[in-house]
Image (cartoon, rainbow, N blue to C red; front, side, top):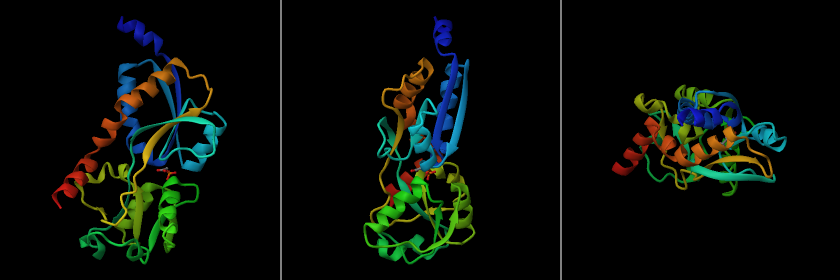
Length: 232
Ligand code: PGA
């Protein structure tokens, strides 16, 4: 019977995901491909604007975004929490402070992702809604580049919490306690309304709905940040 199930799930799965999802999605894909070894996967990793364009053109079976797609006729389902945090180097003076007002943070040099990034859009919206503009020290094209620039002392960064999944053991980055943060968002899986999903795509969608929450929360740093917050 197992062989029958495997037979059903042979085929190709094409995914487009925002760059912040690359820190948990591969773990889910690993589980899925272990259970369904006949499947070939093509994964495109890019920013929000590019994923939205691919979604509009129906280029992939499924897309993963950090917040719901706006202005497109699509089916989108929330699959897990996607909080956005502000980060600093451990020796930054703001690390020791609690409940930091956004106005205070907005006086610090910031490292922001490129235009078209959902991370940048979200953080800029938060500050703009309060009449604040972040002083941009540098624009960087990836989450890893932001982390390294924060470690290099170039400024503060804004990142999806799940991008910190591997930093748990090093302590090289600290999450700031800023009023209003973390910004609460939800990972979304989306596809064009009316699109016919292949058997494989439907099976992976079901897998995401069933297991994404657990996979996201199992990130090593994530568990640690949650524990630190609980102890404070
Ligand atoms: P991005 O990720 O910044 O790579 O576009 C999307 C998001 O987290 O909203």
